[in-house]
Image 1: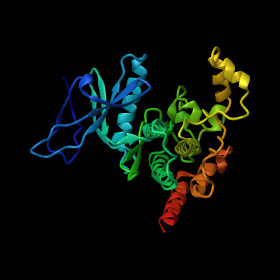
Image 2 (image 1 turned 30 degrees about the vertical axis):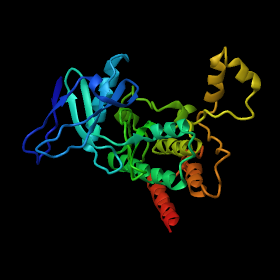
Image 3 (image 1 turned 90 degrees about the vertical axis):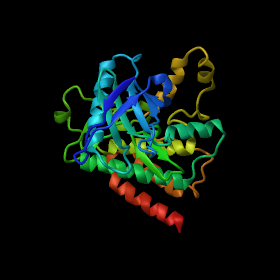
Image 4 (image 1 turned 30 degrees about the horizontal axis):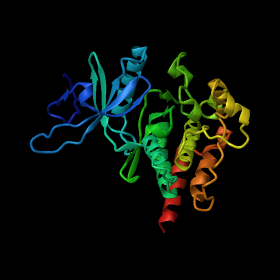
Length: 319
């Protein structure tokens, strides 16, 4: 059993000792590069029920561990400084032999919800649900970009947590953030020479794929692709279309690299709207998707403008 002490806030009289059972006795919520996310169900205290935590723990099987342990420390430090309803809350951090980051537990990641819909042959998410994600995550990004002056750096469905029937959405995973200057541009001097944009290629903006200036708008592009995921029910750039040469598909059985090249060539481009999406019913969601995925970064809205637009659209939908 491993124990660690919850960091003490100024108004807290005494610290809380938390007992972490061995991993096999924890429920697995998800995983990321170099880490596993487990659920810690805390026992009642003084007759009161306590909310569960999500624990991000290092996966020792992934090397080099030092890289991921540093990311976890950076993320813990950031979460302690942040306070926003659309950003997952910090709960505790252990800097012992095995690192743990304790966070507010949410119901599901948006990525998991998309996977479940696919498994159940479900329909695309409703326009209002898409707008709710656009609103809540834009609010989170505006806070990051303006108050914290950092770029999230890895926007995608799996880094968005959803409670209930889209009651509230929260942004998570801050292990690869980058500092921004006062103009919202990647601050290379502050970040250091070794700092680079990591992200996930399929969600990455054109300026990441082809080289260009990294700014706050680099977070906006993948948000647009995340909204597309909710309509297409698949990761971006994984759809096949009629233009795909049948010979390529046939060769995929023996040469997977050709298929990989076919899809990777699309990275940094705007994917086509799925054929089953009604342009009338999804007009507002599509409008946000299109403006977020403008090739020229300067043409994309700021997170603040996006949040305002999404709020207005939701208001109209409720009338």
